[in-house]
Length: 535
Image (tube, rainbow, N blue to C red; front, side):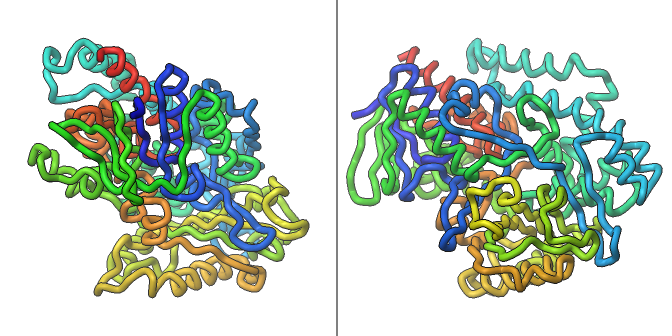
C-alpha cells in the first residue's frame, strides 16, 4: 500500500512525484518503458549518434518548476539558439527569411520582402506579449470549474472564478478584444491585422499548426500560435533553447529530484488497468498481473486513454463517458531523427560550415497556401505531398550528440493523418513518408539526401505505440476552445480531479495543455495535497 501511484514517468509525472514526495507522501511512479521521461528522452539511434527522440526544443519549461526541482544544480544546462528561426523560401540566393532576437535586425530582414510588414512588427510583438503575459499568469493556476455553482464548488472554486476574472478585467477593452480574437480566430485571420506578405504570414502561422492537425485558416489556430510563444528562457520571453544532452537531460534531472525527495521510480511497469471499487480508485493492476493498492491514482496519460482503456467508460456519468469517447486527439505529426555526414547546404543561403541559420529552427513552409495545401493533402491522401517541416540541428550547439564533424537533425513534420484512408496502416506507409520528407528538405538543400547516414522514424502510430500518445497526439488532446482551460478535459473537471474519486490527471490532457512545461504536474500536486490534508 502506498499513498500515491503515478501512471506514466513523463516529465509531468516526475514533477508531480517530486512535489508529493517532498510533502511527505509515499509516491511510486510507474513507467511502461525501460526509461523514464516519456516523450522527453534522449536515446542513441545509430552508433555514435543520439538525439531527443520526440520532443525536441526548450522554451515552455516553467521557471517555478526549474527552481523548485533545482534542475540546474542537478545537471541541466540550457543554451540558447543563435536566432529563433530560418525560413527557406526557394532555391534562388537570398530567397529566405530569418528572424533575430534583435527587433531592428528582424525588421531589416523583413523589409527585404515588405516594408509595411517590417513597420508593423513591433505592434504585433507587443500585442502577442500582452496576450502571453495573461497566459503566463494562468499557467500555474487551477482553472475554475465553470458550470459548478459557487456553493457546490466550494470556496476554492469561487476564488478561482474571481481571480481568473480579475486577470481579464485589468486589460483594456482593446486588449480584451485581441484576446478574444486569439481564442477564436484562425492564425491567418489574426495575422492579417498586421501583415500582408504571404511568406511573413506563413512564418508566424506555422506556430498555429505545430502539433495541430488543421489548416492555418481554421478557427482556433490563432490560440495554438499563442500557446507556442508564451514561454521564455531565463525570464526572457521569445527565446528558444536546447538542453545540452537533449531533452532527456531535463527529465533525468527531474528524476533525480523526485528520487531525492523520496519518490520511487519503477520502469518496465506498464499499467493494465486502474482498480476502481465503490466509485473510487484504489490502485492499479500491472501488465504482469501485479496489483498495487494506493490512496490515490494519478494519471500522466491522455484522458481518453485513461478512461477508454485503463478505467473503462461503464459506470461513468453518460455525458462524461461520451466526452471521453469523443475527446479529440491527433496532432498530424510525423517525427524523424537523422544522422548527417555534413550540414545541409541551402541553395538560398549557401554554405556547409555551421552558421547562425544552421543553429536556428529551419522551417520549410514558404507560404500560407503551402501550409494549407499540406493539410488538404493529408485529409485526402493521408499525408502532405509537400510536408511542412521544422528541422533543428542541435549538434551545431551541442557536441555531445554526434561524432566530430558529423551532425544530428530533428525533423518535426506536418501534416500526417493519425489514421490513413482506405484502411492502410502506417506500418506499410512510414518508409514512403520518410522518403518524401528527405526529398522535401533536399529540394531546398541539394546535398541533404546524400548526407543522411541513418534515420529514426516515428509515424503517428509509432508515437502512439512507443509513448502512449493516443492518435500520435503530442498534446494529449487537441488545443481548441472546447478542450482548454476550464474545459480541459471537460467542464466540471478542470481541477485535475475526475468523476472517479481519488483518480487524478497530472499530464498535458489537463490545464495548461501540451509542451514540456511541468505546469500540469505542479498544479495537480497542489490539488492532490489539498485533498490529502482534508482526509
